[in-house]
Image (cartoon, rainbow, N blue to C red; front, side, top):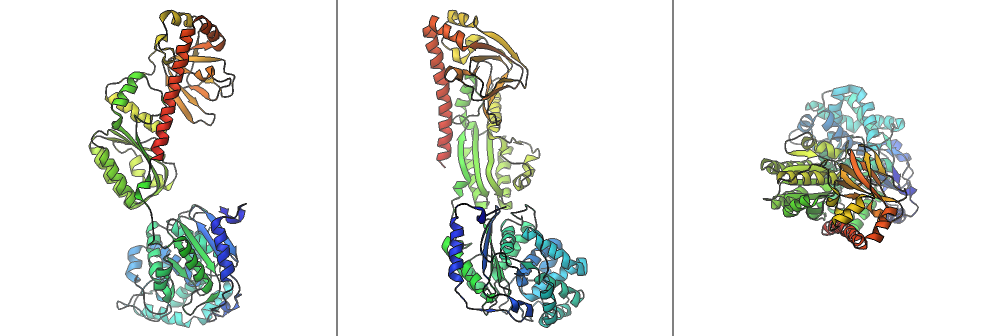
Length: 611
């Protein structure tokens, strides 16, 4: 977990929250709630604001760690838990989802004798009753545990507030008995209300509320702990009801002005959750005549207005979900290819396409991707989809992707998924594709996925990939255009070197004193971190940068058994004196090889810059 308080330089959002806190602290309108005696003891000057992003960064200002009780804010989380524990069919049969138009504690049900929604007392008590049918009085402790998972640490009940609510809770008793009369509440009224009063008396801080809200914003996954606390189904339905009914009688004005799903409590807390972005928690015990915190309302309105966070004020371009698009002819893998292989890839470059995807993939994003994929046909035979920059994929997007790829696979196109990190929610979402589905495979590194596609295209079009086939010195790319006499002289200066698979042939940082000509086998050039720079096979030189630098800049490993001819720089210096024309050809060939590498790098930059 990272907090804005840990930052050396104050972040822009932190500065904005500090300005809001300073300005709204001067607002002394509203009154502390007194109908529950314990709430009247709150300090009216307390005021805290906290924001938690879905990647777990916490901003705090003011009294963000002052404890108060959840009160009606608990209703949102109990509704989510009821959907998961009891099941949506049972919950939705008992509790409605329409705004009531009445006070939150109205002793009235809808025409169908159901509570209007889960954000009014009748609906909240009904949800608690459903939960109590499963575990009875023990549900109170279970709910506290669940709230703790939403907050990311252990929460406790304020026993004094619990007793205060219990003693003064006659109106809620009347609601409970009304529910029992109509068969909504089936258990013992006092037992259910004890659980209800206890859930309202759980102590939190503004910081806790922001984390709980961020958990809702993050599809039920706590961004600090990584725990899946609630299902995405329950979260979506909870946020829906919070949007229409979460702010007491001010719900319509709230949606119009702020446009963020929220729930308030008469103790002075407000929790607001902006899906996929952030969770907001505020605390100030001065409330208006609708039961909402005055300073909290102003803070939420300012944040939404200043940063344009209204959920219906979204901007975006679906095209940004494709970070880059290119074919295997313009941007190749790091495997160095023989001339005949390159000729096949250049002639059939449209057969292999790479789409590098980015961001959170939604219905609209993947609908655009599906059209792009369709446009790639009829030449396409291999498609690489890279997910390194993808944070998530929605259920709707997954369905669309399935439809698009099913069509490709049916027509013989092979699909490769790369960049899907193991153990992530993205991997879980794509499990159906990565589990061995016909025509689809997963290859983690993008470069290796591209290489696989290249290999398949070359093989399909009659090329050969016999990497163990030996070559003669005249076939070495670096020695092109040398005469037979020059090659014979050079061969007399070389020593044969054999390596087993897994041997390190050259070490990064070693003196650059020779170059190696691969006669058979496959070698890889890698950084010390393990990142592959190139894979070379027979007919290619390795360590050729010794002609330009004094120290090795990378490691060279034998991927298979390898046979090389080694030429020392000292012997090459003598060869240059005897054959200056041949030496010029060698350096010109080296320049051409480096130029090709630069062209590939430029193509990659151009592909990325064009999106």
